[in-house]
Image 1: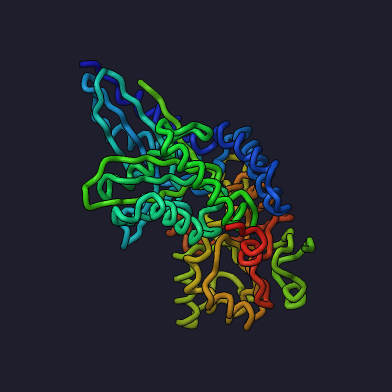
Image 2: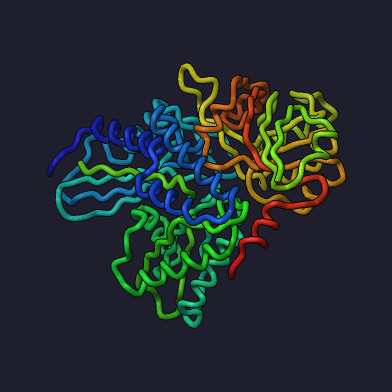
Length: 279
Length: 184
């Protein structure tokens, strides 16, 4: 059994949290530049320009892109033949604590959803662990902001609703969100599975690179159609009106019960932050 | 769509001249407060207690900044979603607040109160927080420190950029934008 030092995980998680928050992905920048070329609204163009300027300042000075540095969602793929000395979850939370302190990131987590006292160190992280073969440990840190998360939703459709029903629901969810999730957004769609599995699929699909194609041509086509339809709604950058409401739509489908058709929409803002490391 | 350079606190005259869609650059003192602080402000008003700042003509910014790095007055500080403040907003407008900076749609009650009390709702661009921090010259927590990033602060801003979403005449940029660009 391979062993990884506790401190290695702590330091790597801290680094990922800081880098994810301060460095906007090249794929996003590229898509924002493309969107700016075709944006019809002058105000919309101005918003997209400021998004790019902001990304430059943030990267140069290592400042967070957005003040909402999120609740830390952490995806782990853990090999069956590897262990973390001192415990994986403890090391991840220690890393988040360190990263949010040393990176001057905002502490945005309350200890209890109803009594709402800030934990002051942004822990606990929301950790999803998958056991895989091998002796490697892959950690992905995804700081997730509240504004876009609050516009996310799960709905249990009936199988008769079919693809049209799913598309209608996704478009409706985006339309109802309006300016709240800071458009341009990235739309993660989970279809199938069970209620909670569907939501998790929607979230995980937000890790995909912008511009990447879905491996299944059926869903690839559906993603493209949805993106086109969403960009016809007219919400535009920041909801001021325009062509650029979404930068990408990502779908993840999973087998489901004969009676069910769950759909989840997880919305991300342009600051679609995530960084990974394999140890 | 005009562009205005305006001073904070706001006067009735300035508010009258602002229309949905106008660009504004604000210079002066503004105050930060999010929902937890709004709850306390409204409680203070209801209990006839003194508020931590003068509401007359005040602009309230819905923001919870990041901690400041050494050498910086403030950390990145973009707007948070305004609808969480909606239940408290009409009371603050009734007691003299003139402007709000946030992002996203407001409730019908807030829009009504903007018309009745002659207030204005601005949007700052969500997600450009590092850029907006450059417009803040001083930042000082003045109340409810226990709320952490949600504490009330006094901010000195210079040319802080925002857009008028709702003016005192009932115009709504979000609605107008949708109408103009909708192709569905």
